[in-house]
Length: 421
Image (cartoon, rainbow, N blue to C red):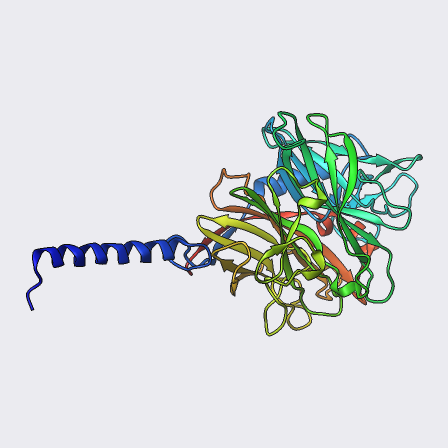
């Protein structure tokens, strides 16, 4: 049947409207399409320059109260172009040239007392604008260096994500907000401590003085420590919001659940501004948060993971589920989504980053805690760090073994490429 001119006009208009609607749907968050292509790890290369800079700084004995190794590697670019690196457990003291006391040909850590150096619970390291590490920031115990973020009477703090934001909404003065994990000593499977709460520290600029520490998300009322969620392993600013990811940390499960909170930009330090994803909406009660990635059936995240934006796609990098003995904590995988809360697809792609040889032959050298550093754009690809440790039986780290080889407790760096596969 022939369509009259008016009818043709209406039909064309309807078709154009349909095409526009389809384009809008494709571009909407949570929908795969040209604006949100699937992502996985497609290639990688070692980033030797930054890895080498941490080796240079750690081995320099000009000072013996500064960083020689640490884990929990996070970073934030400061307004003046410097980079602030945040570390959890940190070794200070002196590095001795090989051979060490055990006859192994590696630089090794020692203290002036002749004892194995013990780690302090956290530190900050400042990198200048040219990429040279220049200063370690610690606190004091009264008799020597201590954690920059002081221990609590019954526990300690590990720093995670940090962001530069206004002191108050609309204020021209900027500060650094640092998310902290508050933990207490544990027994049995809780060799790395029992999670208690997420806190927010405020550092002044440009001198990086610790001004205050305030509660953000208290989990002490959650009876089962394995279900307590600590937030701050990853954060991404998108639109008017800062999205903050966290996880529970059951030591007897092969992987953890991932959770999500969001805070209006510039309000990380305001406890009442936090909202938590409950699977359908954002609401103020942390105890109603639902996982955005649920562990089990080959899925789940490590206790520390990282999230970045790659165009319109959200990408999460985490340690892969542990495999057979000798394979655990050795490979990184990826998930992807079209919105901060998902749905998350994966795991997709896999890489096994280089690790030092295990001097004992027991396959206990672990790679863990992948963290993205998107502020480092030179060199192409996404800069990702990972930490190295030696896990002694029954899963606890051996300080003596770590001190015998400085490569066992320092971050290494990669350049990742993400694509369709």
